[in-house]
Figure 1 (spheres, one colour):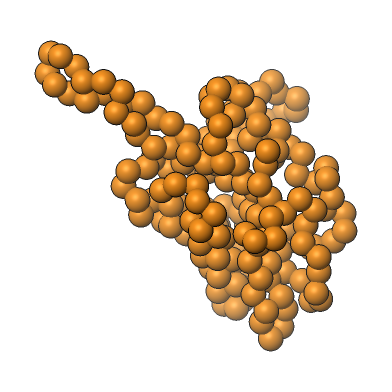
Figure 2: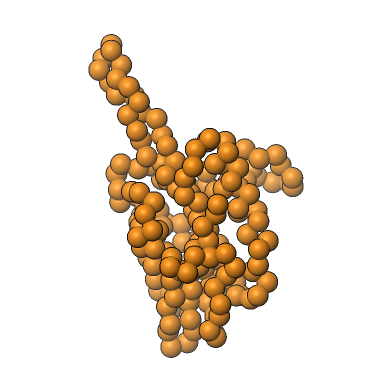
Length: 178
């Protein structure tokens, strides 16, 4: 799977539709980011040439108590490096294709400005620096609103997804981290 804009938009559409489905089933109060891991994992895992890692650890100095910082999804492609002369076995190295941080926002508001996703941006950039390679880095911000809202600051208008339903408008804004 390449990090084409079409594939990112397709993932955004799929996960937002699943979120709306769960909301219509009446389980909105029990939905968390982790509830959305399984369907996103399934969409990503359909391509057998890649490896999907959930909760990918990032080596950052701990600033607070608790677990190490992790990135929700890291998608790697196995690339043949060389063949072993002994048994003619291919040796592969993994190269990160893209990474996704998933955010389920309880309320959309103007408070989601430049600094709202600072922690997620930091994690994604630290991983890129550690890997010493460039790859696509995205934050998927999902929310429900009862009015027409502007997109979240820094989101990519051509990748964002909106579903207008009878009771509300559901949005997934894709923030591309540079």
